[in-house]
Length: 451
Ligand SMILES: CC(=O)SCCNC(=O)CCNC(=O)[C@H](O)C(C)(C)COP(=O)(O)OP(=O)(O)OC[C@H]1O[C@@H](n2cnc3c(N)ncnc32)[C@H](O)[C@@H]1OP(=O)(O)O
Ligand SMILES: CCCC(=O)O
Image 1 (cartoon, rainbow, N blue to C red):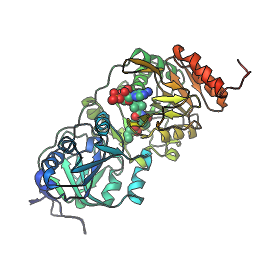
Image 2: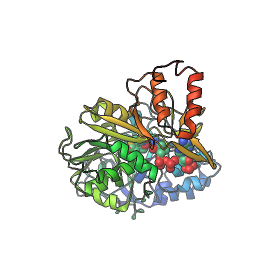
Image 3: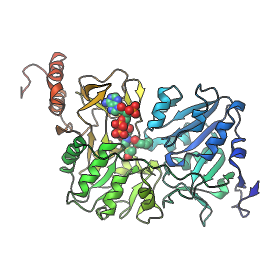
Image 4: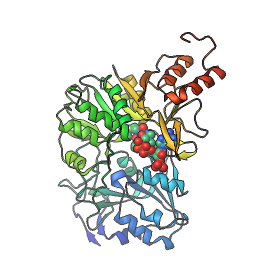
């Protein structure tokens, strides 16, 4: 072991450089480990931990949004050694969950730092992939600010795994000082994974066109996860609109394309004027290059980006998110398929609420009218949610709902009006059946006006 830095702040820890195997050797059976979020999940440490599996039992690992395969899960298909707890599923995490390898932890993303500070027991070991130490002795969290400072405050041991290819992102609380760090893993960790953006489909384009018709110059954008919200960015780029602001949870390739087209100025923002605000990033190498040391990009912890009372301080906030199923009351289930967990609540509900509270703010939940399940075409607009399905955004919060057949605003509408409105944007093949059920169960009274 070699000492990394000798001149520590008073009371600081003495960081030592160690190998990944030495870092993994610090883990004992039954310990609680936390990994960084998304891009900040460690790779060298994970591989070394997986190699130790036969010596360990009941190690609990909490993490979120795995963007690469996790050696500890791959090495332990029966879950005898490692237990995985996850705040938000990627496609990989979803498959692990399908096989019974992990459990989801419900959260409103913006509350996560507070969970660590108030409700979660101290963490035995926190392992983060970070940028290499900077000139101020800070390991920048790169594109993964989120709740990492809060875990760092609660961790008995902090290990960092530096990665030269991690984008360095300017921000508030976006790093950990070497004086707080116990160990630095030697070597250069793998660069951040690139996330592919599938090209928009015809349905995506129709939905995007409807949303864009509601957006004005100067809108402050939050663009959610998934294919459809990204299609909106492509259409905004060709819309002739300008002067957008960005206050988002996730920095996406769609936002970067708008920025590179000169359409994001942030000039009309009330807070963080002139800055694109984010808490994490996931996308292409191009995206990572754009946010790297970019003075126009600013990363805040997620309890700034996602709390409605902060979001609402900008005017004209436009929040665009995907949902997977919506019932005729307007309850949006965006994170599960019955009891099968798909992703997470993430920032959806908090951005819907923040956009509502913003002056002239608007929230959009978008979905294709149908999806294909084992060759069977099914409606996403349903009379009743699939049993077990989780409501991500309650009916009282939902504002605009958009499919390729139209856009409706549910605010202020009665149950009967909501049902009618939602049926009008369902796929035509399902409208008759939805209407029949709505009348049978008295969601729409007989003789309802407009019949
Ligand atoms: C990130 C931010 O900026 S903040 C707020 C945004 N966060 C949220 O909105 C949280 C909830 N939303 C989400 O997680 C996503 O938007 C989703 C899951 C709704 C859509 O994301 P996409 O990447 O477009 O979804 P995709 O079409 O790939 O489907 C994901 C999975 O859900 C399944 N699925 C999608 N729709 C349905 C449905 N109606 N019924 C059943 N399963 C469905 C798909 O089959 C797929 O599963 P698979 O991996 O086994 O094939
Ligand atoms: C937790 C990250 C993703 C989301 O908000 O959906």
